[in-house]
Length: 322
Image (cartoon, rainbow, N blue to C red; front, side, top):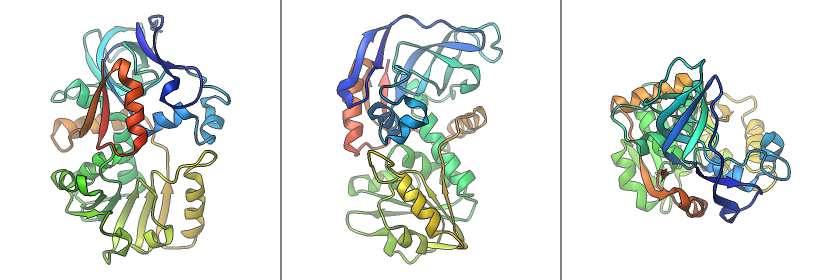
């Protein structure tokens, strides 16, 4: 089968489009005929091996431990192991796996759910990791509730487009921060107020927010904290780039800044789990959220997709059609 592989850290030029052996399904695994996949900024970090902390966390010190590339997936079940009970061949599924940039892929049963009935394969593939991040950042770490005021910094990217819609589904009032070209799109997603960061600094607002979901991490922490009401929550998803620690420096600074304050700080890595995948599936099927897709690529064009991702201007998700 054809797949994208990587045997050394670096830029898109280190990605290979090659023939690899067909995967063999184990007892607790599902073999997927991949129909679509999508890119995340986490894939960029895994490709480049930066910040170097990624390597220390198990990706591989000198080279990628796992040559498979891609996480988000949707497709059709081709075969199941003897211990699998939730799926059978022909089922349409989506989820989070290792090696979704391939014609076929293997996944643990617990990492998959049935594809939303009203979503295409491309739309379903755009959901998992960015959807998990937006949902858990707002609901769990931000504790966003109906009536809260929420600010989303980075509202037009992969996580941000899901976050605006999920925040609205939770009944919150949403202020979205994005660039000029994405203002109208943010309003269409349901944002109550949109700040164009090219003409206005959102930290100068006089509105008190219950939750700030910061996907970009490009404004001074002290100014962000001053935007929060007493008991407000600042949830950090992204931060400054760097070869060594990356956003960890901002995370450590935030922990110190919020120490002893009524406002709370949270930083997290999305937890991939079946329960939340089913929550996202339900939101999609009820029409409360919908995928925002920027560009589509064929499997052999994955390096081009990564080049565009690295420019930092993608609106919503980049999808790979297989």
